[in-house]
Length: 240
Image (cartoon, rainbow, N blue to C red; front, side):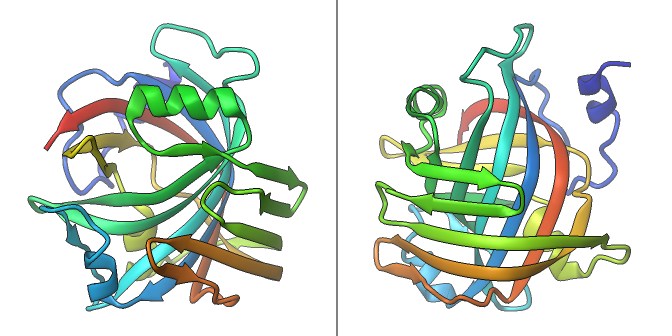
C-alpha cells in the first residue's frame, strides 16, 4: 500500500470528512516544535479577515509558534525537486473557524530558502517569506526575518504523550488552513494521521514575534509539544 493510500484510509480522528477532490501535494514534517500562548479573544478577532471567527477552547484564544523541517515536498505524480523540496519553516498561527469548520490562520510564514518561499507563495497565496533559519540537533534559531520575528530555542524531547488532553488535541489536530488572498478568503485542506506528540523540555527559549500590533515576547509558553515525524497530504485552495 502506498503512503498516500495508507493516509487516506486513516480518517477516524478527523473532525470533518476528507475533500472529494484528489490531493495535490505531499510533504513530510520532521522535528516539529509547538509553542502555544494564550491571547485575548478580541485581540485575535481584530486580526482576522471578515467572515472568519476566532476559535476558542474553554473561552480562551491561542496563538502558536510552530517550527519544523519540511522534507520530500512534491506535486502529485512528480518526484521531489532537488534543493527546493527540503527546507526549514516557522510560522505564527492562530485558530479560526468558518461555517463551523475549525482550522488555522497564518499570521507569518518563513522559510530558509528564497526559491521555496517564492514558489510556495505563487502556488498557494500564503505569505511565505525568506528568513535566516537554522536547525542543528535540538537547537532552532530564526534571525533576519522580514517580519521582525526572532527565535532561539534549545529543547529536549522526552516521552510519548499517552493520554492527550482536550487542549492538546484542540491545538494540534487541525485539518485545514484559512488565508485571505487578494481580498478573498480561501480554505486549504490538510490530512495526516493523529499527531504523535511527545513531552518536551525547553532548556532555553527567546521569542519575539510580531504581527500588526500582536506581540509574542513571553518566554514561557503555556503549553509545548514536539513531534518527530508527520506525513502530510495537502489540497489546492478552495474559495470560501
